[in-house]
Amino acid sequence: MNQIFYNFDAYFDPEDQQNGSLYIFKRRGSNADETRAISLLVEAKLWSKGAYSMVRDDQREAYATQLEELEVVSITEDLLLGRYDHPKFRSDATRWENWVSCLKSNFGHP
Image 1 (cartoon, rainbow, N blue to C red):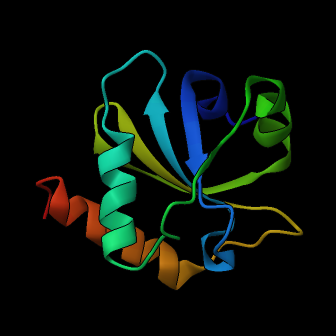
Image 2: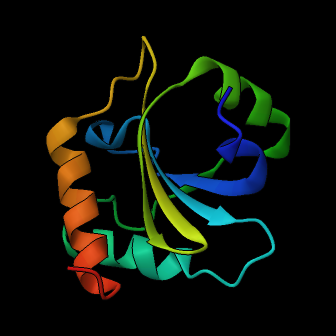
């Protein structure tokens, strides 16, 4: 089971199919800047402008049990990126690599 869905707020782009099963995670109660991360992805044309959704509390268990974790990358201590797969919502490896590259370079990681 993916405990990350219980300890972090999960944000995703509901409009771009290339972003299927890709998530930005913000540690619950932290001051991590998920809006900056989303804005950077929008500027890089890797996220739909004006669109984001968040996994609701009543959905956490379903996400935790139904998604297969492929990779989780730390952008900051309280901000992570996650790549998952689901039989109906496969993640795109190229889009994932672009997300990681964009956010690591913009948050001060080479």
